[in-house]
Image (cartoon, rainbow, N blue to C red):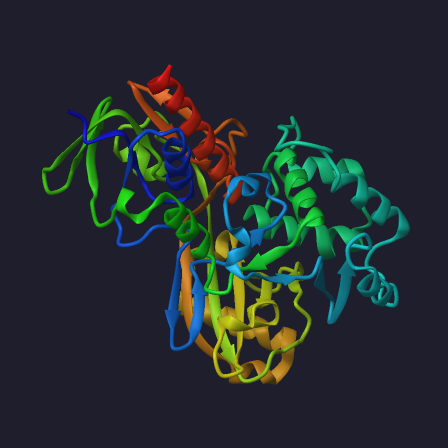
Length: 408
């Protein structure tokens, strides 16, 4: 007799979403996770009254896959406004989406970063494709931006640093279809922070599934078509197996994708008595004078991220800067923060940094996010595209496929 109809390896977004799909079909399911908590790369630590997500992450309310997740409203999210503070030269300028933030847009007209032509082109770009998910393109993001011919001020001040931060790709070689998807998603919804941190999303999925269906601290060392072996030697049998580990974990278990490249990032957190600015806006720094690409005062959007009225600030580095030692990166970041905010930044307390070596796949497949190999189903955003939506989509679709295989 099988221990479960379906056993799933990995309690990240893909694994939990697949398990929810299987459970909804009436089949029994067991999720086996090697770490001490659910979430995968969506993890949150709590330290001295501060909420620290492992890497700067936001929940985009316009993600199509969130529509199938129950009780999203229970996450009590705080939102950033649609737009950004943009560093150009020695000045901070403001760019707001006129369709979403008309009042902020009026203010930004006094310090124009975008021409009327830029706005028309931006509106067109952020509406493509008009419906559906990511649509692959033959052009890189850099090639697409060159073709559109934004003004240099708008391109270097907003579009490029924004897309670099989202794609974690300094050269913007990522398929332009993914860039268009992100622009559309940001323009149609809000970028939010759950009250207790980004890990609240996978925790919500785990609660919806039922914690009794999840085994934590259980590392899988081998898999086969109808079962898995745990590190302590225990065998778990099933009618079907889904490997929903990240790319490296799946490769170690014999998955077919052995050389999936990834982009890395480092997020540094600082605490301050006062916020350097009060708007719930993400700051983009595209001048290349330091490691920081984007910065956010998280407590401006979600005050629960720090107790006692403190401000919690995140600064994210991408590209070659992630290869610096923590001390080298911290020193370079402090120099850049002084350039951006003056001497007040010297009083900010460094809290922690999180190096995420495999933040997102650097060459997105832009596919359904799963495949079958030697009788085992493999799924994850490394087989679709790097994002919460890509991971959730992969889990939903592989769950549906396994249900079809079991139920006929």
